[in-house]
Image 1 (cartoon, rainbow, N blue to C red):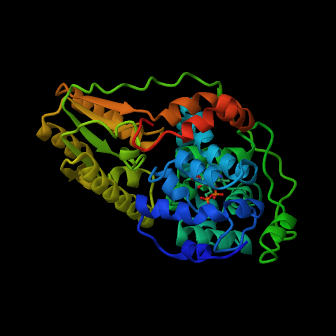
Image 2 (spheres, rainbow, N blue to C red):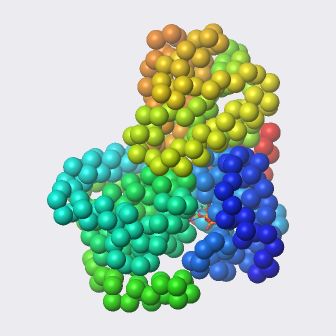
Image 3 (spheres, protein in one colour):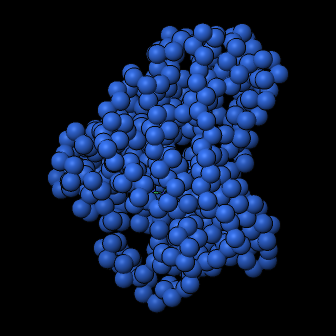
Length: 420
Ligand SMILES: Cc1cc2nc3c(=O)[nH]c(=O)nc-3n(C[C@H](O)[C@H](O)[C@H](O)COP(=O)(O)OP(=O)(O)OC[C@H]3O[C@@H](n4cnc5c(N)ncnc54)[C@H](O)[C@@H]3O)c2cc1C
């Protein structure tokens, strides 16, 4: 692969804006086909993968934009792997949306596992997350994660596997450690990937990290021969109903009512959404300290969201030609309510927040606004409405579902200024 600029960019600290995300995508596109062949190689600065995940996760850029960009530049076969990778994100989101109890069960188990940490187990856990487990590769990844907010997918799989099967720590604590530090930390991709490694997602089928595989894909940088438990059995858990339920209905906006636009860090590209043609009296958004504290987020993760929200507010102000307000971080709910009242709107419109803390926050805001006769209208993207219902079984049927009858092509061709 020709190395023209791409590797260096991966190392620089960037201001998280939509423009930077789109530029990152544009500079990755020419390399997408070559990268696909070597994407499992785990050698910093990870120039065989896109490193687009923090931008995709906050929807500074969209899944459909990433897929359309690579398909426009390459034959489909050459970038099929990349398309599937992006669809994994949509799949995990849809899968969890159809089974919210899996997220609730994770939070309950995490609480119990945190409470259960005592004595030597607690000291061991502290050593492990400080990068002092004694397993060189694992410790290097723990440091890389806390210092950069990123780990290569293969390293995430090895890390989770060693955490669960060699170090014998509760998987929930590992998932929470990832969520604390990853700039792309995401309830669906993270929780479900940890469950998949543990053997809880596809029951009885777990992912065991093997020393030989690590040595091969780190190109000899690490060789943990004899240090890993390569025989461990999958984890089990009390019965949990994994039957998919219905998706909640997406509510439509009443275009005749005076409205305000509310942004959350779950979706920061309103001008490239079905809201783009609507008229608003104002736009607001801001970080919410209790959300960050609830997830124990690292300062770099909070800073990423703060900067991304500021960028989205500036873009929305220009696109919708309305004033923007930054909500109070310490009192987000009260501040959002006061903003809606100050605009004298009848509805507050926001892009759907998937399962997680921000959704809980919106539910609280909904109740507050209702007291004033103001509706909170959560609009789901066409991408999500079309694809999430397909996440009823495993990824491979989902992948088929996404591509059936040109569904994916249709979805990627929705122009930014059109609904979507
Ligand atoms: C234990 C574990 C925890 C994970 N936690 C997260 C998380 O919290 N947030 C997150 O975004 N991803 C998570 N992933 C998935 C994956 O590791 C990252 O999305 C990927 O490494 C991001 O790097 P990239 O942008 O260079 O990916 P690329 O390889 O360039 O892929 C392009 C895009 O496809 C998507 N993608 C690729 N692989 C996956 C995958 N396995 N699952 C979901 N989406 C994928 C991402 O949006 C990514 O940006 C986790 C994986 C594991 C094994």
